[in-house]
Image 1 (cartoon, rainbow, N blue to C red):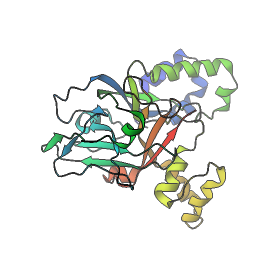
Image 2 (cartoon, rainbow, N blue to C red):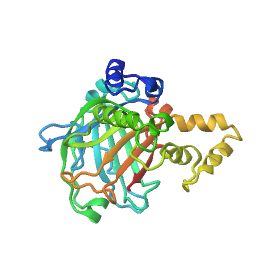
Image 3 (cartoon, rainbow, N blue to C red):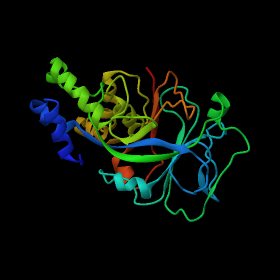
Image 4 (cartoon, rainbow, N blue to C red):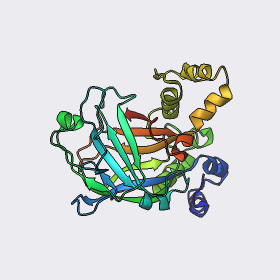
Length: 292
């Protein structure tokens, strides 16, 4: 992963984690945090924004669910600004990335659209003359402008699998302090790109890979990877590679100011294959919801 190792080295030393340095180097991930900057006034076209009204090409139709209902606009990201923070070098240099979704029931394989528009000259604010599907269910949301910053994220609770840290109170406390300082969400935090998903289990990438690659739904059992192996004619290495190549394109948190409450204050995750992201193919993504 590409990030500032000087920051990592300093925090490893400050928190007494030198004996775990190799694990921390291997497992730390670069990430881009998103925070609420202020309520949206729509004075500017094409800025990064959460909910409200998107700035769309004039000839683009509003995404709909299979039942014909209007999807809810979740976010638009101005990639010219975000790209400066993209240490993974996966995102396009310019353009707007849009996220829309259908009803958040059930919590897996949620209907959605991720749309990339390269040219931003002909964009215009698009308002709806009716409520979108989530607005019908939960009421109006409050739109905010977004700011972004580069961060480093250590494995979250579900993904931290180092026995040495787990079994030593001092190391565990030091890890927690380091994790918090690196990825301090702070006031206004609303989500992030890349990094680790907020989850109870470390299986988000498997769940996404099953649907994106094999068209199979995940039933939350370890042996589900066998479906992916079968898809690749018994090639376990290829199946694991697909899981490893899943990228969390965006996680959106619950937020009182915005009005998001994903079930019991949970989060939603958009996933994409790394190769598809590099090739600007956003028509084969996966959306799920996690709530404790």
